[in-house]
Length: 269
Length: 269
Image (cartoon, rainbow over all chains, first blue to last red; front, top):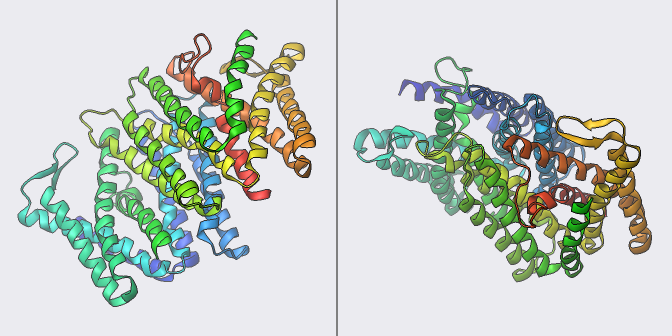
């Protein structure tokens, strides 16, 4: 409970950055990608897997340099057109990360593979926050990411606490209940719906839909991070906020929700 | 030498399919993706890593269903616009593959990670053949992929055989020489240039450039596959053509070249 409140308070500066959008958000996402991938790779080191942080940092720099060039220097506006450049970045990132495996005498079988995963999961997923902000209606919908993720987390906690009986994933995450999971999705839908009624009257249905799907994906992101951490034999990815984990522990749900909200808004709004 | 000739002959049906393009090429790429990912995952099983073939097949089905719907049923023509749908497919593929890791009591730490790699490397990379064919000038440039990959392979072999002295990657691939690698790139550039002079007079420079970069990437694809196979402790990925390996052994270079030719043509032609 205390963790949740303190973690929530840590989100206040993030909320300010979300309100500003634009370059402050780009800077925050660069930090999240760089620290997040470092934490994720450090987790693998517990299993003697050593992904390349250097490759990750170079590819993060290239990704955000492309972004700044396209949206700021070049004054591009079409996220559809820009998608092709992102696909090229993905191919390049995967190729370079796999080439890391060439030194077979110095590197284990999973080093290149974990490098790829850090790039496509931590870096690429978290980048969708910036992408969402670049959409015409992005600044409206970026809030639904936060509402779906944290709404789902808080409502799942209280619903589970009050009426939770049936275990959701007893081995992976023993405290979670099915009642909590459902409560989280309903809570996220209500929160996003109320947000839509006040701030995005034209898109109330989309907001409720984001709440439902985003609430589910938020919990999926949480379980995915838990599964990785359990395999790595660690409790937290990092120790950025003492006693409350690192970037990847705080953002494991939102980096799952952000891509889905981005594509939903891109394709339907 | 004999392997190379026989492997070359096996490419004759592929050349016919490349000439047809369209739906026969889609069918061939579905087969390459499905068999290729099966071989790649079987390779990991030698290390007790068990990626999910089911997830791979479902995501291959979804990818090509999207393709057929967009380009045939919907009569879409813009590869730029379509890129956004592909990014969505990538996010979905990565999410579903990572969710495979949730059953922590039944699955090892690398099972989900290898599932992701098979999807983004084998399935996504090989799909660029179909994408290239969907571009307005795609049917011209699709031949440069084959010329760059196999030209590089054959010229590297002969140059290395005749004047090879300095080892390129002694531990990873002991027979390869620096002279051979350079000869491969030059040979690929010449082949693609000659092709351009005959069949694509307006794009000779692009063809030569594809030869140079494609020739280099072809060799990178070969070394990447070698590195994985050495780590897995296997000689070949498969045994589709007895004595001459499987799909992934034959296509390890072209699936590296196809994406680069696709983006080059998309962005510059």
